[in-house]
Image (tube, rainbow, N blue to C red; front, side, top):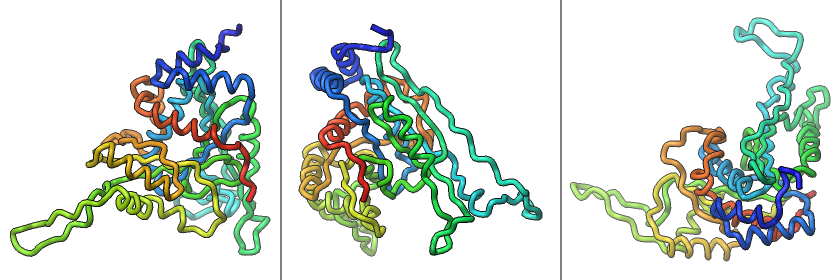
Length: 322
């Protein structure tokens, strides 16, 4: 057996050491060996992505540490400002250069690899699209050519179990051209466990709000944190679940959160877990590359990664062409 190959049982044991369930990992390993599947092409959706890179990094690292082959397909710096005009201006804005800036070359790096198994986490950074000023649309905007992203995805299909699309910006818009699954990341700054507080005159200060039920809290979370999903005119899209990240300690217990999850399920949103962010993220809008090698960091996201992978495997893997 080649060094980088392993049996289903070996992969399952590695998953159990990383915090996963041995029986579930063994079943998935045997199934994937018997019936190869097209890799999931996952796109996370979020209104504000700056504090969510730790969550994405933790989930993808947990998959790799449990024996999966994972690719982070990251968008390079936006080429819009160069292709929009075909020229770029100097800082003084006094002269134009005759040649547009060259687009960045694609780069590939290994973020983590198992020494004795198939688990690997790769990162590929490339341009996703180019715009052609000479071929304008009916509204006068340059036409967008997304063939670079399509080529990058096509070239990775045979090598990975999961491909995660990581845009530079625009996390709130679904990617129907390439993604086969969409999962919402809901970021919570203040958990809605009570009605609004009322400021009272005099020395009394502030009156404590009326406690909310889990169902009321779930409704507020949908309105406050997921409203961006319904704010743009686009075709319906299937959501494969929602993961919550709280930027502060949760003021409620597990039973309360279970009630919130039940109401989310009733509303058609599959709950995939709750996570707690670092109070002071040390890498805003950047993947925590160094921490993604740390088993302690990975362990924090093992449960939500396992639930997400189970949800993805339970659905047919087809590209939404609507």
